[in-house]
Length: 235
Image 1 (cartoon, rainbow, N blue to C red):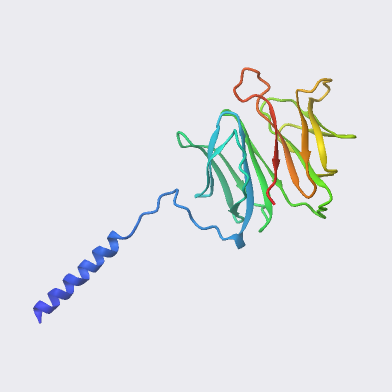
Image 2 (cartoon, helix red, strand yellow):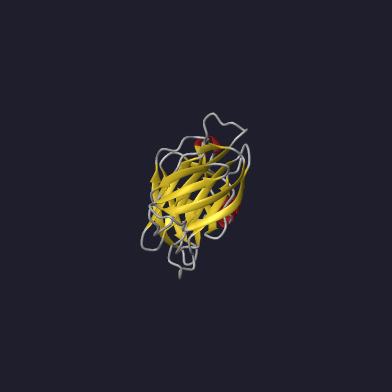
């Protein structure tokens, strides 16, 4: 009987050791589930001239790694809507560079998050990508001023007519319902007669929404000079 008890104890001990050895300690980067029913969707854009690659976390959950300054992410990512805290880290070395609490996201809605500035001062813009009374017979265009050192600007969308939009630094316009076709886009520092930057022959298509972004530095010696980039929002 005593031997049988010893054998049982030995079996129980072995079983415990096996269970412990199979238990993995999760790393902070281990993906965790964000339930779609409890989340919004965010498209992230990196317009910070000093951090050309950033890692993005929602609270402690890794959302997106190595978001580049030089190319646009074209996907939406699920973000929890309750007590959301967006944290951005430099990819190499990994250091916290920006943090923002967000409390007003709506479930199932889509947003664009633009992170801009430099190593001395960073900020962000959050825009609702929902369009009321969407009409597929038009294109929808909005503009963002995320340059780190450019004065307030006037954006001119030029086709057979000209639409002018005034923007302070760190602001965005609402979507404007526009005719599809090819446009020239010019940015003027307010009061100036010559554009600081222009792009030609930009096609805007019916049934599609676009974000026109001014980013970079007016300093001509900067690696990340002033540019205008067009983001076609995912459908």
